[in-house]
Image 1 (cartoon, rainbow, N blue to C red):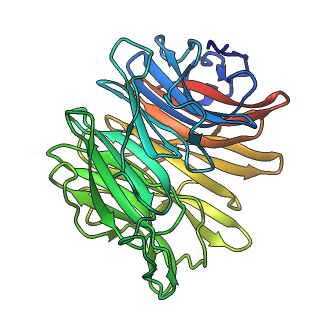
Image 2 (spheres, rainbow, N blue to C red):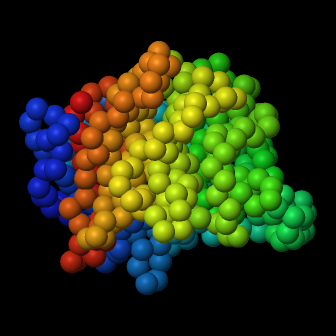
Length: 402
């Protein structure tokens, strides 16, 4: 079955970051489907966007390929080999990377699934299930990253507990436990999973990143006594086979009897520094803000720095790093509805005595824009997000030259 990709031209809003206005942003959709939950990956001029196409009858994962740096995209192809078995909501979007081919992970009725398109192709092989088979409980909120050897690492939340039985949560309540798992893909295409942490916040997205020497980092929203939902990071030094104890990134003190459905994003730069962005509550009146910190080793973190401006209303941040560059995008509440915004961290947080410098905030979405995704290369930043239009939701893509 062939699907048509629709491309529309929008006004350029990004001249503040370049001497000349960048090319108009493509939009991606599948006819007869609402498109949402974008993910984007880039390697040189190769760019891939993955997203969920939702109809009344089914949800499928699609990917579109660009060979000119994101200026144009080919027709979308379906990623999931079992038609209609994908699931997508909020922070449970598909995730994509480019390495030894293109890898996509998503949530399905079978659990966390992964599929690969071989280098030079745009067709995905039959998918594999990442998590162990025959499990009880829910799972989702998946994330994906490649290590320096090109091995995919997947993190996710998992409700299997121990034998699927209720457990005492760390905040003193009783209920079905949600744990955090990470898995690395073996050479035969199967996955070796490791439990990273127990009793974590129930429905905030996870984040995973890898550095040199077998280092793998996983970030999530943890439950600290008595009932505080702060961001934690755990580090592996053996390629994800075992992880150290959780390290609290910042003592934000957000007490909430429930899940914010709004998790962290992390990346490792070329020097091995770990960068993290996350949302947390400013006040009941202002809502959430987006914050940033960094670490040399995943054990100690710099004091947090707020990235959004104004009265608050920021959510769903995503962070990307390339070389020494760090870029953060998030969803910003405005009087005209949510907008996707972005800013770049331009200072060196380690050598500078003051806090890192940041570029002005740039608004990417012309209409209601939600759930941004980012990829960074040596010469550009690529952003994708879900945008509401009169014809329904679609995925917008923008390339920002350095």
